[in-house]
Image (tube, rainbow, N blue to C red; front, side):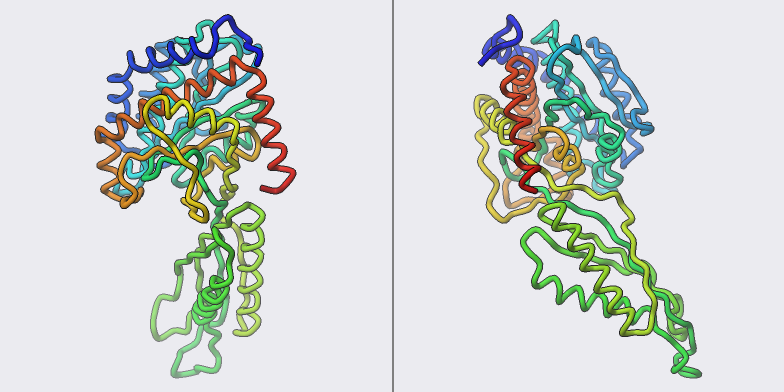
Length: 401
């Protein structure tokens, strides 16, 4: 394979290891600082200040308020002539339980990879981007960034995610939320019961109908709903009732079919109960994740060299959804998992938040920073890797996978 720089891949790997090791304590302190001061979606101002400060001090040009998002940024280095690699940083936390998804580690690893890569390949042929992506947990910052063209021209979008498994890629589903409102007619349930049209009864019937539907859904698809409005007094037949439903599908096409099923069920319930109904998506939605085997294979090999072997995901298991899906349908992308606690645990728990500041998390973050930087070096130094990655993405897109 042709190499575009005087630096060979093996030399680049060795330099990356040295650069990550030299910054290990500083990167861990960044992870701990974000962990100590968790910030919710679109409020991650402190995290952005910390991360961009480190990037600017080491020579990156930083653009803030990217795509109109005050807590998004794009840091850039390189001569711009050649491949373009984006390292994705997440840093939003969860309400009440802080960094129980470990985004403090994602941010520190992406930062470490960007800094190590620039130092190892200086001068960088091509472009290295460190993209700050807010609000993965709610709001979908990457959806906005993708729609704004931030990833246009990128040959590889790279990130890792801490978890309870060490998997080469992430089986992430498509997801969206749909709000359903039933309109009936208020009445006194004793004084004039025949005049009432019970909107809440219609909503309850929709839940029952969806429970039946759920028994025949394919793997990776489900509907989970809550009542957001059900009336205000027991002596008034509710004239309006509303539910919010979270839908997931193993593929984006499966999600679209499930949304259509939900709407048909709601319309059928409305017809049978004498109500009217309106249903609408209330979020842009996350597309399913398309793993790029060319790039994830490189990451897994580099991670193994750092002492952490990865395996393929367990067939049939899905691990939620992420806005990285919207990136992965447009450019070659990876989203491997690296364990920071045993498989008996789970993210989005207080225990996971505690683990995200533990020694195993430090080891996982540093190994992932190294593997991300080495994978990025592969793309920058060896044109055939980007070509193969793009070919793989086109083939998956054509097959609807």
